[in-house]
Length: 386
Image 1: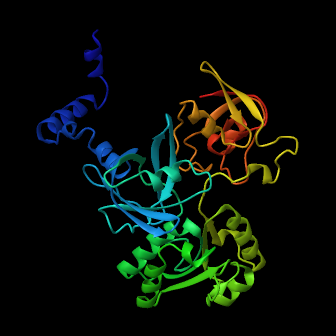
Image 2: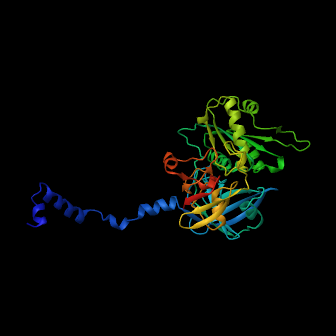
Image 3: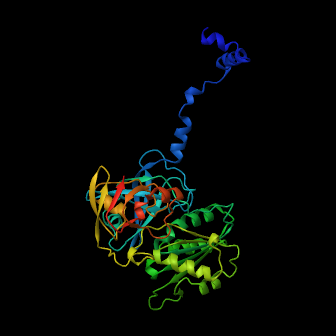
């Protein structure tokens, strides 16, 4: 007996066949929409963007503002506090750097970023000295988790910014003041000198016009005659500036040293760690000064990194593995370059490594030997699977 004859003996089979015939005759043919949802998702969360520099302006003697527009089409939406990872190729080396978006998410025509000069900066030096209006770049889509969540973070926000760490806060401040949102923001901005302050005039003007935004500038190395607040953002100053912080959510973004210092000061005030959010901010300037670095390994010590099936490269102990690989043309997927996004995760087959505190490895990564090369430093010869 043929299979099609046996199927008719199954209870309900004929009714199902009839329903299928009716559906084919009167129903909607969804095959014409195949791939539609994927296209929508790709438009909202593209893997890469094609960008063009439309404006460049000087923010301070050491920083410039860059306005980036889409080369074609439009820019995807983002949340205030997110960043893009800008890709460059310099001297045959392909690399990337994450830059926070300073423009507000309600402005959909462009992304603004700020770039400050960095000592021995590789990418920042190129952007500040070589890039002109009309230059084109590839970047990632918006990414990152340093944004306000109204369900968990409340409406009383205290922003602790240092140097170019002001950029993600600018996006939020502009959105809240432009749209008249009900959140209360107190920005406490630490800068080395008055000349180093980015967006100072705009911040003063927004604070003057909007009662729910307060701007406090703190200068650590004041120039002669400076009459504003001076020193560091310590517990005593925080208690004076924001005496009722029982319901406040604190956000910190700035240089590496600022995180350790401000976290300690907030702890002295009894602020719970769950009420403190920090932005990732790249590898430490001197990894050998980090807690746990072995005393016998110097920053300029070189090790051999064997790439299974792809030869070997030399890597310096004081430089992230990702940078060493990029120098020889091996480019790993990356977004944050700060040990958070996990896109660069790579299997460590053998050898000893160092990873600073804050690298967000999953439990399964630790169990099966995966690392984040963007914040991993060799302490011996290594073998990797890339």
